[in-house]
Length: 219
Image 1: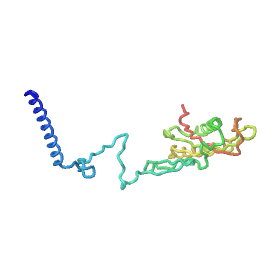
Image 2: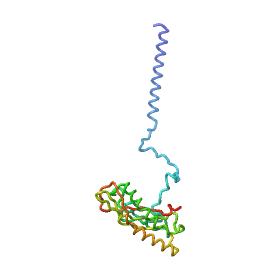
Image 3: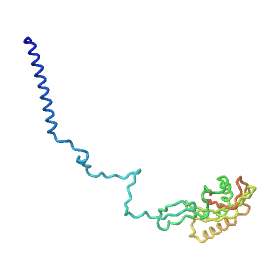
Image 4: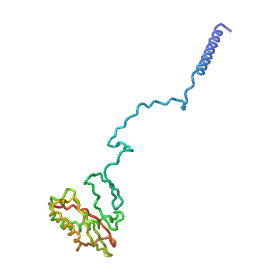
């Protein structure tokens, strides 16, 4: 073996020894390093100070458990609807709504029939309240008119009873109070001749209610 070959073999052997030494050192360093903490023993992250959530229009501020209820009362309409009245003082009055009105989904008459009855009842209310002074009507004054109707086998609808209740009409003046009472009596007596032909199955009796604002029809 010549000199050049011996030098090459020695160089390869030296490289192999250096690589083995480096590998042994890396193993020793890994063994001496502390183990990585597990998820169960990892310290919890500090969340920092609590963030204050500002109320917004889309997210109202939460109500405290010990906060008082808002002023007002809850009323139940004949169809079971719960109505929250947030008024206070003398303005808090229960709604004037008859208690025997069927829910629209259970009404035995069609919307077209209801509209036809409204066309019969409204002129009576307007005529009867024509002598009540304009100044007596508040902007939201209303005459709620309970209307009892029947429909025979031939489709003839007849109004058999009218029961008006009014609100928002000032009775402070004696003459005005007398005119209001007379208007109520006029409406009750206004069933004569109130009938029309409708396309609806026979109905022994049902109740419809019409909120009418006479002041809206005055010039």
